[in-house]
Image (cartoon, rainbow, N blue to C red; front, side):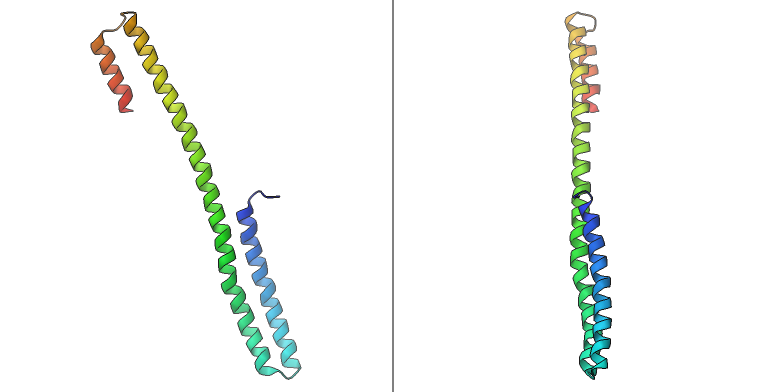
Length: 120
């Protein structure tokens, strides 16, 4: 029900815009038929124009929600990727420390390997 709320708000903005255009035109025609010509023409112009401008704000709000949802998704993906990369680096450092403690690599080799890991 609340999934893709930004898209739903944008669709609502479009639907309300169309509904108010129809109401404005029909209302204007009705007013003209009752010899209220100026009021009818005013209604046919002002109501759709007001609906058009008002729909910008509602549509813009839906667009903001869409963008925030995208930002939230991208932030979570970036954070998860950074955690995984940090864990991989920590694992490599531990392996190098084990190799150095077992005297399988020298201190110089250890320092070179550590500097390469930290460059990434």
